[in-house]
Image (cartoon, rainbow over all chains, first blue to last red):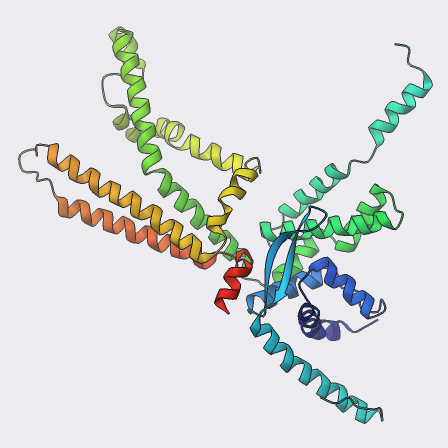
Length: 112
Length: 273
């Protein structure tokens, strides 16, 4: 199980990265994170929506209610140009942290 | 009809059958009681719950099991609301202020043209009533609309004023709050989705309203013979209209500023980028 702080800190780059691949709604984001982490990271509604709303207030993402094929309406989030820029910076920072730890643990660092 | 055991079992099954719609409705009510959640938040959480139920149903659970598992995953409404408030503590107050400002706007708008038209209607009915029925004086004495203009009476009498001036507005608000006019509301939603649209709609409506008010003032001043020592003061009328227009503009600005960001549409957002 991951530490709460780590899950909270990584939520921003994760949400931005998922939305960089295309628009998505809250439930879809939770499923995607579960799938990518092999079930290790379990987000709840109380985790994902406050993060999404905070990022929206910061102007990094925006949202729109749209009707899905099932006829049910869902709130889709998508990345703004400011969000795309922030994601670049976040990616560099996280990779730098990753590489520092890799060097400490004698593992192969990745190219930034 | 004889009640066979099979028939009784059927009745019992029908009575105990799980009502998913009713269960979701109950959950929605619990969420609505939480102060930290806006209507938009609640709508979003409900679509999440429905998605969650649909996935669980596909995995072989019954409707009832799916509902309870989905609820458990979502967490207690109170805890859920606390998470939302933690992320944006000012949201609760912003939301309250938003509805307060909307309420004041509605009161101001209502006390303008609609109340004027209602008063004219009541006055017309009262006159018809008094003139055509030739009521004796002692009856007229107890009827609120005798010979005197009903508007004056309405302004003076608190109960009458509440009943006739504000009851239709209160009724409308109650109907809106109970969600019975959601289709009509979504038809006009277009005008309130973005700040720009709200400001344009409000400005155009206010411009029409105040132009009408100034026109009416001109007409009245042209016909009224001033009492000795009283002058028809157009300047004062214009000042009042300007003052009202400024207050209305400030209110519209406040509502636009408080309009939650998630009500912006994609086109609105992209235009801002």
